[in-house]
Length: 239
Image: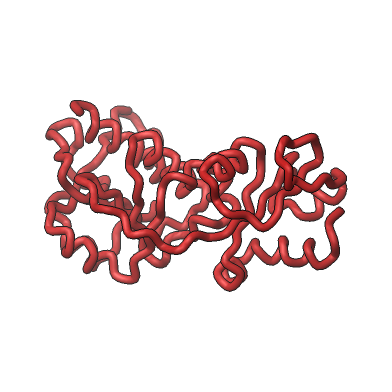
């Protein structure tokens, strides 16, 4: 059974300010919840409509799950997990940076891509969507349990501190297929609508693009998650 107070508190976690205030976030779905549990993330509650094999899972009705879900359609399991304290991760040769990426689905997909390619840390500007947004958590399919999103108030200052080349994804840049992408570098991706901020652009050594091979008029652009996937594939191709 879900109490009225629990219902209220779970629904509050849709808001970023409430997630920050309570230090909690919601994960839904057996795959996603399972990844956090397997990674031993502390949790405050587990609710299920089925026979989920966890000693602390609370059985609730489908009606109750429909009331607490953060989505239009509920999953058979919902977990309330603690937001971990920021981790200091040793810098790796490849740094992926997101500048003002606002779509939670894109961020979730990028987190999943970093997980796939063995990148443990993602650098985000403060105005990039919260990685603990329910839609981001869902899109990451549990990869958030292994990839840390570090939010920086001033990503330009952070990039300067790394002392390595900075490349920016830009449709006006040089084709990524015409050069060998270095494995010791920072790669910056901006929002689809506004691109990379001017302050960060000033640090970019070279703009790089994914060329459009359709001769006649076609797709105007790739979404940022697709761009990150193609870049990572090219960067790591000769590893």
